[in-house]
Each structure stands twice: as structure tokens, then as C-alpha cells.
Length: 280
Image (cartoon, rainbow, N blue to C red; front, side):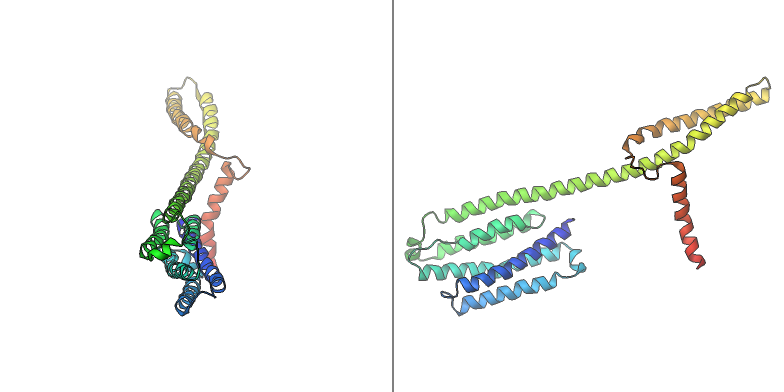
């Protein structure tokens, strides 16, 4: 799977989680939500649903930029909703644990982030930064009723999320390296198969010419000259065989067409196919 397909998958997962998570928050915080929070929840569901609609079809898998933009777009209503949920919980609760939606979001984003550091880091910092800004804007009376440890708790979650994101991006990098090595191996094996075909093609004439040369070794000066020329030609063919010999180790002998005859038949089939189609 290439980077564009991975980015498409990440955007689809983010949009699905946006619909599911916002739907759960509608029922979970219905008792403390007001018209503004419900409006943001509706916008979040519409945004995530619209992103899913935009990501459908094969054309959406060809670009990495479009899924990355949609990945970040579906997060914006969630950031606003998390802010308003914490505000509502702080107002309606005697004691409350702040920034829980932000903490869950940063860990989830680190796991589902698309290839490339900028998108994942921006998504994580979006939730961590909004929580820190909200913390600074809270009244002192509300901060006094929150659980101890903030804002260091959300900062710690952000650091851990960046570590998880690092492992995720390292996995993407390793996958790319493995695909590159595999492509090189396939290309080398194809060259090796052609090399083995050329070597097989040269071996039989070498043996035949050597036998003929031995028969021509008589006292006739003309035949002696011809046999010397034939000997030099045989030496060049042997050098060609020595050059191609190292490629033999790169061929995986899996029973497929590796002999000269099969290589020749395959080439003839490729050449004759267009001409046969033109006849019809």
C-alpha cells in the first residue's frame, strides 16, 4: 500500500470516528449541553459524513494531499466540541477531570495518522494546544475544582502521542524501504533471467564450434587461419559466459520458463500478438 492509499485510509478512519464519537457525545452529554454545543455536534457529524462522501471512489485514492486536508478538516469540529464539553462539565460538576476528550483524541490520532510527520504533529498539537489555551482562559474558581495535575496531564499525553506517532512514521519508512528493496530484487531477477537465457544461448554454439575447430586442425594453411579466427571468436564467447555467470545466483529457480526455448517462445508470443490482432 502506497502513501496515497495510507492517507486515504487514515482520512476514512478519522471521518468514521468523527461520526461515531460525535454521536456518542450527543447522548452522553445531552443533559449538560446547550444549543451551541448541539449545533457544533451537528456540524461535526455533517463534516465527517461529507468527508466520507468525498473520499468514496477510486479517484480519491490517487492523491495524498486531498485525504490529508480532509483528515484535518474533520478534526476542527471535534476540537471545538471538546472545548465546549469541558466548559459544560466544569459548570455543572462540583469536581471534574478536564481534557479527557483531548487526551483520547491525541492518542488515537497518533495511531491512525497518515504518512508524513507534519499532518500527525499538527493534529496532535491542535488538541493539546486548544486544551492549554482553554486552561489559561478558565476562571480561577473553575480551575480550583478540577482534578490535580493539569495542565501537565495533557502535556504528558501529548508527549506520549508524539512518541507513538514516531513509531508509526518509522513503520511507514520501513515499509517504503522494503518495497524499494523488493522492486530492486524483482528488477535484478528479471535481468538475471535474461542473462541466463543469453548464456544458455551461447553455450551450445561454443561446444559445436569447438568440435568443428578441432576437426579443422590440419596442415592446410588456409584452414589453420580459419581455425585461429574461430578460436578467437570462441574466446570472446567464453568471456561473455564468464560475465553472465554471477547473475545465476540472483535467479529464483521456481520451475518457470528459465530455459532458452521458453525465453524464445515468450519473445515470439509478444512479437506476434500485435500482428495477429491487426489481422482481425
